[in-house]
Image: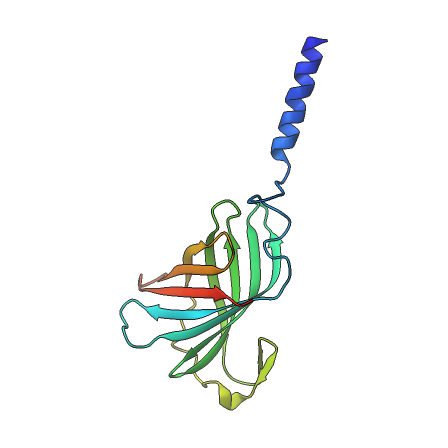
Length: 170
């Protein structure tokens, strides 16, 4: 009987330890209670002390990937002196450390766009995305309160870096 009880306790312990964690400070089925979630802030290349780019990112979809990380999908907008560029955004957040990696794609700035629910006409955005770099990623942290993101962009081919600082809008 003692062996069966020990085996049963061991089996229950293994099952409990492999279940997803839910509760304060632990992983739940979603990172954000409601979507969309909007962040606003700035991006600045390390080599450029003058041109600060205004950035907004809206996360519209969240999932948990096979490794238990949060996968956030959405869109963003960079506003610069040269014009505005809309992007798609894909992010992974570690639920334990709040480490975040953000990838950008599909820069678009011609035709009619919808950014954060607001239609933008063609003349509101620049006509050239050839200088917009999407080969790289932002790596950094999100605060556990989910209020701030600070990450360093590193371009894959050149190693050029810049800093992204975002704050959640309530």
